[in-house]
Every structure is written in C-alpha cells, then in structure tokens.
Image (tube, rainbow, N blue to C red):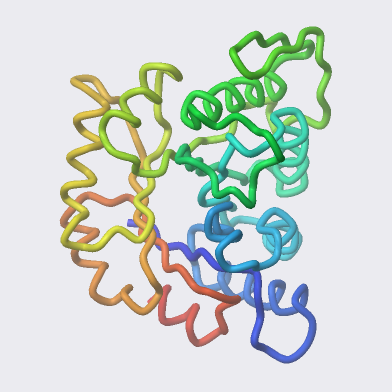
Length: 262
C-alpha cells in the first residue's frame, strides 16, 4: 500500500510559502512518500487557502519522482479549454506526474459564474472532462455535447505523451458513479475523501455496485485526517486500499512527514 499526503497550501513556518513548500516537498520525496495532492476545489473554497495548482508547481520544481494530484476538481465550475491548458502545462512541467481527482457534486455558489446553469453537475462535469481529454489527445479536437462544443481546436502544450490524465472519481454513491462509468466507459481510480473508517466498507460496496461484473483495474485511494493515520493503516490494508493519504490543513513539517512515512 502506498502512502501519500494532501495539504492546503498554507504555512505556519518562518519564511516564504514557496520555500516552505520546497523544503517539505524535498523531505516528502526523500522519505519515500508516493504522492502529494493539492486539496480539491470544494476544500480550497472552504478554507480560502492558496491555489492548489500553483502550489503543485512548487512541488514539481523541487521533486523528480513523487506523483502529483489534485484531489477534487469541480469541472462543472471550470471552463474546459482554459483548465485543459492549465493542467497540461503543469503535467508538462512535472514530467508527466500529474493525476486528476474529480468531484462531480454540485459546486458551491462561490465557485460559479453568475447565471451558470448547474442543474446537472454530473453531466456538466463529464462534458468538460470529455472536452479536456479531446484537447489533450487530438491535434485538432472536435467536441459536441450539451454544454461544450468546438471544432478544429488546437491546444498546446499537451500532457506528456499526449495522454489523458489518470482520473480518480470521488466516492459519490452508486447511481452517480454508475452514470460516470457508463458515460465515460471506465474509471481509472476511486477516492474516498475523509470517509469514516466505519463507513469505508459501505463506500467500497457502492464502488463495486457501480462498476458491475467486469470492473477492470481501479485504483482505490482513501484520504484521512493526518491525525488518524495510525489507526487507519490496518483498516486500509484489510479493505484492499491501494493508497492511504494523510490530509493536512497546512504544509506539513519534517517530523510530521517522517511520521506519516514511517
């Protein structure tokens, strides 16, 4: 089982925020952590922390191996073309290490443009994901969906290898996850965001119900409060979790990173 961290890009340490990120990123990689995730859009809006994408640029610059992730993109509140370019640029800068977690729930009002129609956030999110993937993989992309349409679009840079990013779907209940699987044809990964240990089995059962009889390989990631890591390790191992991620409300210090990695 891999171990990673997720954090808000805030610091209580002396010195600048970029230096705190650089120091922690080097330490995280040296300690053998598998991944570093920025908080999702919902959490950033709740905490008013710094932009997760910009924070991951700092992590990318200081590291060579550790996987980078965004823990909960609310694509229903994003412009597909702009966001595709932003994420492709980060992946290019990081040498192909970026992965994308998506949150298909209804976005908070503060994330939406005035008058935005989010009656169907799942459909809107999937339309935007399909448009982004077309821009990442096609020399001249064409998309026609209920909420996104364009043709002959040229987008550069593209992710390394002109690939689709690995997409992790946040746990959202069987009907929503089944719709995502049926529309997209697959789920690369599944993420449980701060699900209580007692509820983890139920969340995994929802995933199994959504995937059907032939699910293929789906990576299972569980995000937990950093203080709950000691008690979560055994639960995660027994449940077949592929990656356990400690969530911090700030940039973790060296001793905290070492404790997570131990």
